[in-house]
Length: 209
Image 1 (cartoon, helix red, strand yellow):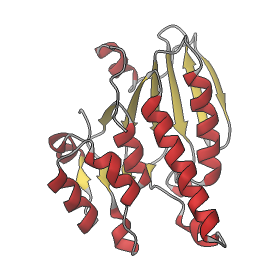
Image 2 (tube, helix red, strand yellow; image 1 turned 90 degrees about the horizontal axis):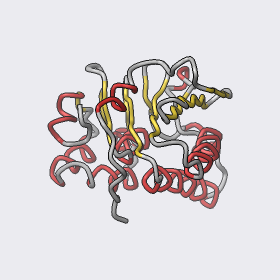
Image 3 (tube, helix red, strand yellow; image 1 turned 135 degrees about the horizontal axis):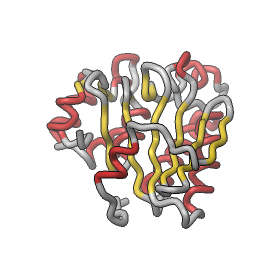
Image 4 (cartoon, helix red, strand yellow; image 1 turned 60 degrees about the horizontal axis):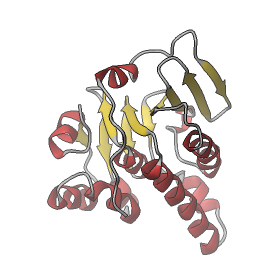
């Protein structure tokens, strides 16, 4: 599926990713996802909020985020969505303990399908989507960054598709990754599990700055 361009945005929107929402914004939050609506600038921020578990994309997180994405997609007053996280990790990808706890292949497939639906929702969102990355983004967490229209990162941020280090191959994240970076660079990341720095991620084309 091709990634379609979104409506234009300017540098003011990118700068918003590093500052707090204005006092005129509205907000809501739950245990796993926080939402802030900056009604003045028409920018909504979704924050992954499970830092003790490295903001893994568990089934509960996927469900909560999907509900927010569906609501945002239907809201014409929102122009930009920023996705960020609390703690030291942007997202470590799937919750491997949750995957191991699933009893059947059907349940595991359903979980992966749920994740794929979320990534496609990010991809198809009528608003421009910006990933604001402050820490490590691996596997499906890296896929989430690659699925956004723009990505900005802190100097200490790192990126990887390191499933191979635990005997897995990040086949689904590979799709989004290969749409952002050169095939040889993507394959190197997939086959070695090596993490790359934010500087390398800029050079590869995974993030903007």
